[in-house]
Image 1: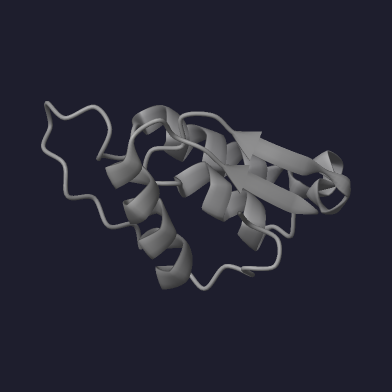
Image 2: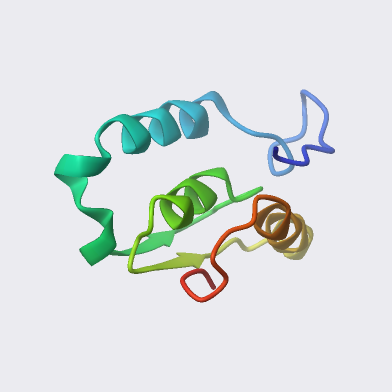
Length: 90
């Protein structure tokens, strides 16, 4: 579950369709992607959906970045909410 406080017009605090599509792709192709040997950096993570998926799929390490401080706070809440392994996500 991703906390999504933004409105339709808000860019930073909502989950974009592209994040959902990428997350689905990562999940359905997890075996061939071999994320456990990959270090992932999400630029402009927003609420952190793709980063969370990478963490849950056991990426070696995930770096979550966004220029917006509020987004980073919400991403951190979403990371905790989705019981990510905090040893592999920063």
